[in-house]
Length: 239
Image (cartoon, rainbow, N blue to C red; front, side, top):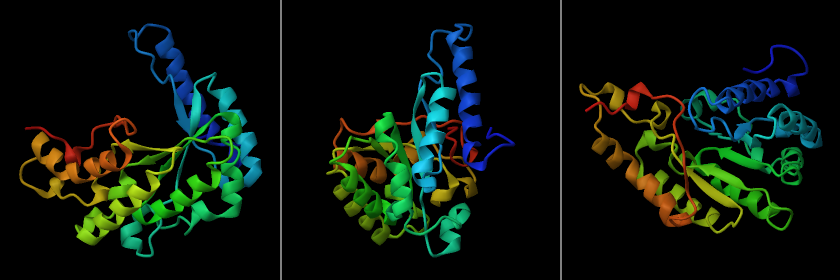
């Protein structure tokens, strides 16, 4: 729902406008008492540097009081097969000085930063969190996939490396972890290739090492849960 026209940098504002429309529908009471889309997380390209602030301010206005922060993906891998649809992402994005100028616009506006990356980038996210922890706080939310991406290889060394990085970033007071998004084929699970769909027990066993790693690192009070926007057929538990 990005805007089809206008300056490229401001096109994500259209997405916020759309979701705020959904929030208005929910506020009408016609769909029950639930406060639908009471908090909106959008996107702004932080590689705009200080110019990102104007985009963020436009999104705050468009959200009518519901805007909470942005999500900015930064996964990178030298192997295009591993990187998949993220193959065009720049290496070391979270360390980029211009990106960090854009990141610095978040805290003054009271906005959070939602990170989505592969586990090798957890160190870069840790560096970012530590670089800004002495300034006005910007809450950083790390997706659980950042500790479990590349499970496609099933390699213990990948898991152990992600586990160590998770423990380090958990020491940053301005970082919490999001648990969810594991029902996706990009993580390498083969449930969609099996003759029978997975049961809830199958999924719990497959995801347990990664969920428990995050809970052990951050503590039971720090992680936040996440709802999946739509069911993923490849990992749908139907038995």
